[in-house]
Length: 330
Ligand code: PMP
Image (cartoon, rainbow, N blue to C red; front, side, top):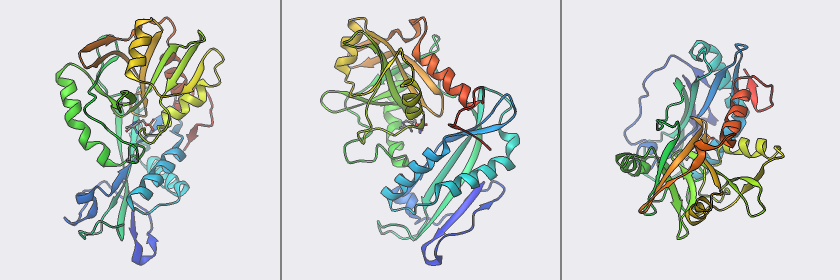
């Protein structure tokens, strides 16, 4: 594991250390344990057919980490320096990067406020650590290979002026009850809505996308805009950038409401819904539970689905089948 201590009184960041994995020893009054003065990130190391190991746009994870640090009074840092440290860590542990194109080595950078005082203030001391774990695509699906999602308009994940757009732990604990309730009803994930119009924000810990025939009769790929309620996903951004170069598809960031979803679906214009994130890349959605409705989405019935094209493109970049600047060989 990698550890970097921060001590304001000693001039800030101390020398990074890579050491055998071990438990942390932490003061019970550490601010991270009481006020969730902490943040985390998630990225992966992919082993390609050429045996080279790649990271996918780690600079964006560093940027997002620093934004979260700012919001929580945690110390910011030089993202390039942390990428260098992570690169070294993965190089040392390179045999833990699976020799497989269905598995990866998950990288979990974490930053916690360790100052052992009860004041709700920026911590004088902090610890940045990075741990690793081999993973496969771990979300459960239905037999059709897609997920079923449940939207409860009475529960919100994020709100204007809040921290929905930051990867802080305090966004995740409060999702557990709603997710367990959805699971009891036979759904895999929660669709997070916001506001009186039931705006779609995210699905589980993924960004949400829709493909439909727009008013001009064109096929459109849409996702909600980054309005503060949505985590700026690395996968989301990459999909928008890649798909905007595909001439047969209109790409748009726009507010999507449940009313619009239902309307488009009834008119036969809604083609696909899917979630996107580092964990599973793309997760097609075939069913949405909302109030008393059980809505079937024809995502798995498309001849040439956009979700598959997006997924294939991302995987090809991540595993080095095509050379692309998003993939960084380490
Ligand atoms: N939304 C939330 C709430 C998440 O936790 C994640 C995972 N980081 C995402 C979206 C997807 O982001 P990314 O593509 O950067 O993994």
